[in-house]
Length: 121
Image (cartoon, rainbow, N blue to C red):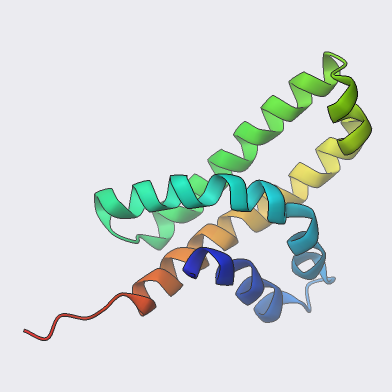
């Protein structure tokens, strides 16, 4: 639930920044929902929900996806080129992702901490 709520929180809290977080939700939702759950849940199981670590993981994951997509489109993968667009468009999406992905990771950890059951002892 925290992973799904994080992009919504960022969009609500920072919509005033040229509406970038609001537009980032539909553009980044698919890559985020495919990569964030396994990566963040793995990190949370190791060290607990650390917001700073989650932000760094969001940035690294975004850069990794960018490298993969860029290489595949540069190699001429027809379906990917048709779906994503030209390398210049890919760069635009992922530059914005470098701003938004860390925020989504950070807030996923914050929300996860907030939703964690507290010990009664």
